[in-house]
Length: 98
Image (cartoon, rainbow, N blue to C red; front, side):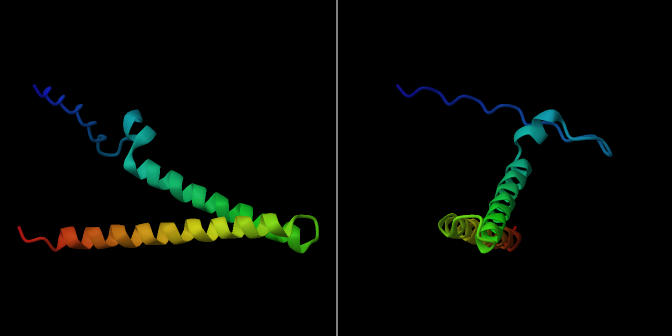
């Protein structure tokens, strides 16, 4: 016998007009996840930039700078690809016939 599917948990309520968002929405929502991912990309780019400056000044390793630059480039490329996919998906949804 197949067990029944558990019900979905209730959706968080929308914040009141002009009020702050509830704690549950700000702690793990989609927008928060996207913001965290963008912050990580920014941090990766900043790290690469500082390592490149150190290597140019002769104080750091060129190898570490190249690895960090490659990571930053890859993170940026993934972010751009995901943004393009999200825009395409949004456009497709908006063009649906009702």
